[in-house]
Image 1 (cartoon, rainbow, N blue to C red):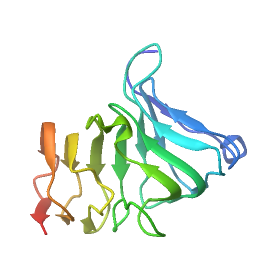
Image 2 (cartoon, rainbow, N blue to C red):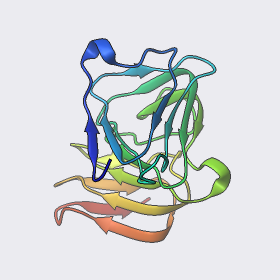
Image 3 (tube, rainbow, N blue to C red):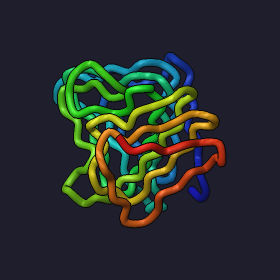
Image 4 (cartoon, rainbow, N blue to C red):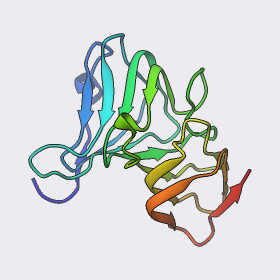
Length: 166
């Protein structure tokens, strides 16, 4: 497989709460509904597979919740659309699973894109160091909840986006 592949499944083929979901190998998954992850299961975003290309999960305003885990591995790409960003615990933001690891193995190699349709805060779950941080939120402000460091790029995709420190 070459290039970016987009995965669009009919609702009957969506993974159930008892499935683990691995997103890698250049696949882009856009979540169009809320998804629940059962205990012992996980949603994993990573750079893996024969193509060794990064997987990308676009959340929009949708929520992943449940007693399972969310894991962001080396070079995974996460599109955050929730106004409250991503958090380390509680029922706020895009990820609301019991276990949340946005920096698996402390590799500091995640790629985060804030692309909501209204103003956003990054949330306390955003790692302090990451590979790339991108603001792609046309006409709106994205406010950093905490200071960040990027090992590669800090980007603003739209000239009308604004990044503010808290």
